[in-house]
Amino acid sequence: MPDATLLTKLEHVIAANWTRQIAWLQELVRFPSVRGQEGPCQDWIAREFAGRGWSVDRYTLDEVALDHLPGFSPVMDTDYSRAVQVVATLRAPKPTGRSLILQGHVDVVPTGPVDMWTYPPFDPVVRDGWLYGRGSHDMKQGVSAMVFALDALRDAGVAPAGDVYIETVTEEECTGNGALSTLARGYRADACLIPEPTGHVITRVHVGVMWFRLRIRGVPVHVMMAQSGSNAILSAFAIIQQLQALTAKLNVAAKSHPMFAEITDPIKFNPGVIKGGDWGSSTPSWCEVDCRIGVLEGTSLEIARQQVLDAVACAAKADPFLSNNPPEVIWNGFQADGYHLKPGTDAEAVLAQAHQQVYGTPLEARNSTAVNDTRFYGLYYGIPALCYGPGGVGAHAFDERANLEELQRNTLAIAVFIADWCGTVSLD
Ligand code: ZN
Image (cartoon, rainbow, N blue to C red; front, side, top):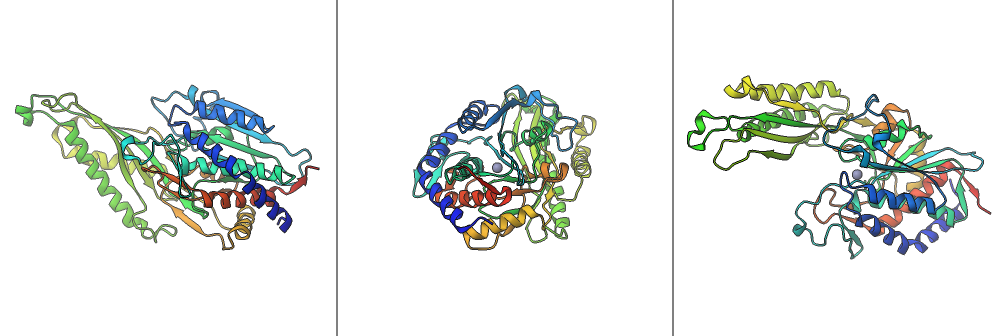
């Protein structure tokens, strides 16, 4: 536990750096780092890290062999030579403390119609204590917190006594392959902290998530004789209804899950993108639907995939054309296991103590119906991984925003956590 003097010092330097931290976060939000376009954002971050004297490893996902590793998610139509990842190392001169990975993602989801935002999504506005913009909340504010927590330690005259890796990854919103690549590249530590915008609670368990594409065929005829054709869009509709029925069934079963019994309908199914057809007066001969479905923690993805295949087959069987032309199910994107951070790790105890010191309340836990990158560390590499960060509103929504007062306090909690976990050495 850091002495009260260090805590006070950290509080002061975080306040002193505050204007700079907000400007830094605004700069970060200004990059429209949607999938495939994260490069300029990551290049800027790499320069920022190098400017702090950290050694920087900048690479792209096509440079790293991933597809043989547990947790890998397959992708289509994605150019991994543009998927830039950044890992900076802040090496302890004589390491006496524990090492730490701080990881955040800089990929953001699409904005939807910009005219439905109060402020332009990539032109961050600060108003009434909130910073608006796509990614401001999820999770560029968390990235600013981990960077400015380290700045605070430096400005308070100390360095972590263990090696710290500061990682900004992509693909968190669709595969997790960015996080996986850092592990494939050999980065390891005694613990990992991912400051996703949890609103200063820890994520105890998260569901798994699978993405798949439905590829459905139809028979094009003039719509005046539609009965002799087969409408791929209406077929997609029937399949979606069957998948909704599957989801309802899974949510009944979830009522007896030890971690999700208290949450209403923890399994979410979402048809997220639909494309199909070529002409208003022809029955559409094709339709593609990109879907996302949750998987209860503890259920294997193999079983979950079979449940999806069975539901699609069941819908197809009820249709004369589809029964002979079965729809394809293409696993494209997230094949993500659920993850349960078991209580009792040293890392969590240290975080709980830091949180208590800064917030004055015990650290609370939540169970999440969405996925995050901690699973890679916890499930496949034996590294305790904590998902804990600042708060805000509007992840994936219009008018996404970060709460600045909360961000400042959370930056302090993270700084105290780093100091407690790694120990500190004086820079004098
Ligand atoms: Zn996120």
